[in-house]
Length: 50
Image 1 (cartoon, rainbow, N blue to C red):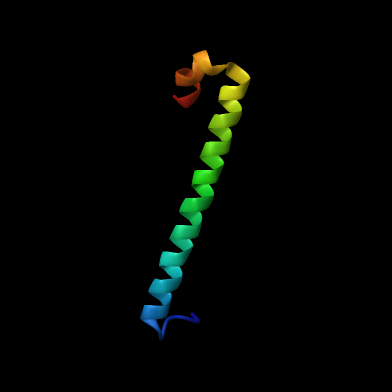
Image 2: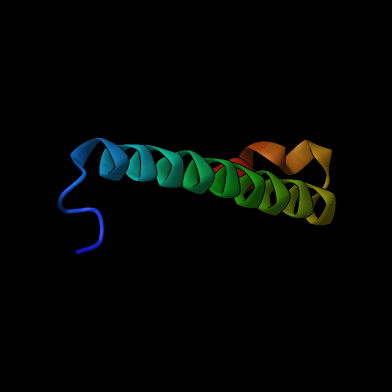
């Protein structure tokens, strides 16, 4: 492995990847919920979120 000899760099890459993944997942979930609420209506927003 490229970062096997540098554990601090490997940890930094891992942390950055987790942050990027978390941001991407947040955008995905927010978009999906917004789309679902717009299709079902505000009165059914609880059903969309579950």
